[in-house]
Each structure stands twice: as C-alpha cells, then as structure tokens.
Image 1 (cartoon, rainbow, N blue to C red):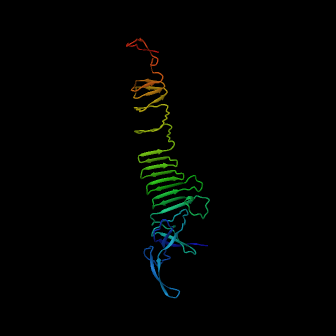
Image 2: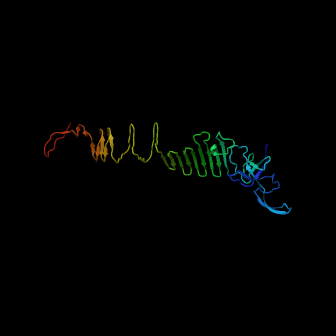
Length: 332
C-alpha cells in the first residue's frame, strides 16, 4: 500500500507558466545548508571521480538548489488547472512511498504572493464516461477566471441530452459581454462602443449602436398593444410595395400633401374645403359640406349632381337658336 507523505513547506523559486503544472521549488529538507534568497540557482560544478582503471577523471555537472514538483489536486476536486504560483510562494510538498516524484499543492498555505491567475473549474456532465476518461470540455460544465486576460467565462455541454449548450464570456479587457448558443444565437453587449446586438441563424438582427437602433428580419416585425401604441418623431419614412390599413376611425390633424394618383372605391364624405392639384378618379359617391377646388380634371364615371341639377340629364328653359342664350337649368 502506497502512502502519501507531507515533507513540509517549500518555496517556489521560479514563477510558474500558466500552461504547465510543474514548478521549481526549494525544499529545506533537501537543502538544509542553503542560505539567502531561495531562487532557481543552477550552476556548473567540476567534480573528480575514478574511472574503471582507477584513474582520476574530471567532469562538469549541473547543480541546483531547487527541484521540480508536479501539482496535485488536494481538497478541491473540481479544479482542473493548477494555481499560478509565483517566485516566493509557499507550497506544501508531498511524495509517495517508494517514488522520487515530488508533488506540490497550495492546500493549507496562504496565497498572499499570488498576483495574476488563470483558473478553470469543471463539473462532469456525461453519465456514461468511464473513470479513466481524460478531461474533455465537451463532457463538462466549466467556469474559467483569467486575470491574465481579463476574462470570466462559463460553458455548458450537451453530454447529458441538453437541447443546446452555451458559452458566456465576460471580457473586461475589451469591455464586452457575449452569450453564444449551439444553434448560432449570439448576444453581444459592447460597453466601449455603446452597442447591443442579437443575431440568430435565420439572419434576424436587432442592434443598438450609440444613438441608432436597427431591426432586420426576413419575415415579419410586429408591434402589439391592447390599449395604446405611441410613436413620436420628427420624420417617418415608409417604403413598401403595398400598404394595408384597417382602422375603424381616422383623425388627421394638419396638412396633407400628395404626389401621385388617388383611386377610391366607396363613398367619400367631407366637411370643410377641398383643394386638389392633379386628376381625381372616383368610383362611388362623394358628399361634401364645403367648397371643392380642382386645378385638374374631375371625372365622374356615372354623373355629377349639384342638387337638384344633374349634369348628365339636366334640362334648360327658354331654348333659343343662333347666338341667343338659353334659360337656366331645370330639375330633371
């Protein structure tokens, strides 16, 4: 049975690289006579030994006051990456019976010498994995903090039948927050550029950039309000092949200017004056209480009546010949 032994506390002699679990440590129990600052000193030493013939032979060897130790996750089972210890950090040193490999951990040791760190935690999400399966992000929910890069990130997986997976990243270094989904949905908040954007795989985009907002879809944009929908602006511009308006009652306050023809089917009732520049074609009756003025042609497809006179069937009295003038119209 192999036993794990704590050999004491060592001192890191060289700042650890982020992508490795091995550090160089000074161990007092291995170098009891060392003095001064504990740094990763490597020096060349000349040694004399005897060869097979009993002759003295000189050789140059490398000697150091620190030894390599590999990180051991002790007491924090969900941590995937090793702590980013720095030169001078205190670490606990362990070994296993019968082995020369040394292990280090920060368990039980303070982290006052830590500065920038990159740490990843993981929680297994695949119930079908064997115990010997190596770490794979697709089989874990993970959380990552990197003060090196200014990032805090969360990531889920689909290893347990989830319909989607998400990658959430808070990028303080670039001032951006993003949420991305497996089905290509993307949400981005950019605090530097004052923008907010959502897009999906169908090509729909909603975007706010500083003082402007945009919405683009391939199908429909709907606004629904049970009571009131208010729009207030200086200019409204509408471009469409066809506009359908179904309103029980319309009230217009202000002038109306129109360029182009007007076609109407049905009756038209007006109170007040009406002035038109251009032609007007109408199918249906017009009832107006007020004056009508037109500088173009007014065409009545059936008749024009100024009660009780019909322009189509009117009669005149006192009909005469030649240059004489007939009398006024009479009712039909």
